[in-house]
Image (cartoon, rainbow, N blue to C red):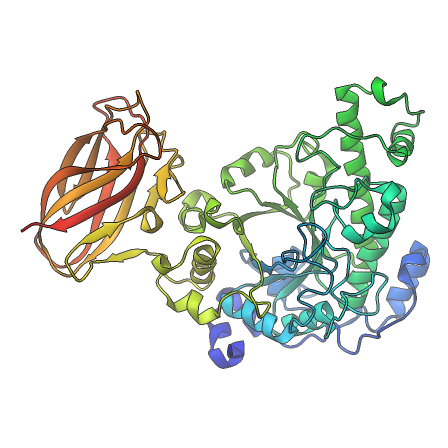
Amino acid sequence: MTAAPEQAGLLQETPVGLGTAAPVGHGCNRPASGPDVTRMSDQELAEHLAMSTTHPLALPAMTAVALALAGAPAHAADVPVATPPIRAFCIDFNWGEGGPNGFAPPGLWADASPAAHVAWYAGLGCNVIQTFAVSCNGYAWYKGGVVPPQPGLIEDFLTDTVRLGHRQGLLVMGYFCVGANTRWGQLHPELSYGTPSAPHIPFTTAYLDDLDGAIADALIRTGMDGFMIDWVWNPGDLDGGALRWLECEQQMYQELFAEAFPGKDQVSAERELDFRRRAIARCWSRIRSAARRANPKAVVWLSCCNVNAPVLANSGLFREVDWLMNEATDPGTLAAVAGMKGPHTRLIQCVVGWGEAHDARRIVTDPANQHLGLYGFAKPGPTSLPLPLADYHDRDLASFTGNDRNIAVLARAFTGRSLELVVTQDDDGRITLRPATATLHGSSPIVMEGQVGHWGNPDDSVSWLADVRQPGRFTVQVEYACERDLGGSSFVIAVAGQELGMRSEETGSWRTYRTFPAGPVEVTSAGRQTVTVRPDPKTPWHAISLKSVTLVPAP
């Protein structure tokens, strides 16, 4: 069992003092039922909030540091507070087998413990918990609201997570999947493209009324500090599919353009794009309005897997959202957003979630990314949690693969620990250097399918840090693949101040590997040694698929 963060001493190690806030009482004694805030006018809602002793704004404020993290004013004293970096994580209840589509079925993970989850997040080193108000299956993670709770929900999960998270000085965010909701699709088949695990909901007035009510209800009942909005896409925005022009979409057309629908065959590509952009703009307006009515300080956080999508370029959503996250694997794509976002908008890069497609260590250690917040998500394990925290903090990074390696990187980055990957010499004296333990320098090489590939830039290189316990003479061997007609590139293997030159040979394909001798080297002393592979500018560079470099003890 994971020790409570106070007992484990992890909160004392958390930078910027986020783990030392006094309890704030959010969510305490919250009623299981109450006035239906979703049906109130703005004036009625304002009066209700002013009188409510359970609304978060009527309760003691969070610490100035936590407010600075959220982007809110520091406090009444107006004491300047440095904005802490965003360190966020999500144990993703959208994942799980057994549902009617790719989403978790209703009730899966309903036995999750808020206390155990908050302890895990705090121990990882997060200052922001991203959990769920309503997940993609359409059921809520809190009780007594306008959206039915997950079947069998044992504890008032979101409300209790907020209360316990605030005691640790953590922000707690909910979640809404805007473009997909299985329950909505099942209840309203005429207003949905079925119920796939993909964006399937036209942003009709009826749907936006429902979403508006769910957002306001969750903010008020749970005291959450804000929420992530995911999949703010029309049907077809992600996969390029055409609109079906359902009857409800024809009505949307009339509302958005103030003119009659001209017929399915009369809508040009340009007009359809305009329709999609207007639909998203109206949806965002309703989301923002609901959040501001329920809690003017609520953080609205956009997760976007394609920040270059034409439906979002130069949109009000990008300008007005509080936090904007790139869920795709390349943080470089955020550069295109820099001129589109609002001056207050904080940028976040997702570094965990898509297995080896994400390279958290590379992103975190790149100085060009130091201005970005960091986020990761992972499928729950059998206990509804990922691996135990001790594994992520104490095991060697090289012992992990995929998502777990990236989580281990975040655990170290969040708590200020070393991200070095050190390869240990085998008992027989061999030193085997594989892509999983490599450090990639530059933007082109990536690790995938057990090899370093896409290495198109001759200025980029790959290196390893090896712990040599038995120094001596070694023969260096390089295993790689090279496509037909792309051989002849010169490259260098540098070991302990010695350089071995090689020229690539064709092996028949990018996945037909052969092992080639590079030559002898001598390592004269024990300790850490860097081994580097880099292109040699004497010839034009064509990529190789690098599988391994091995130092074999010479006889």
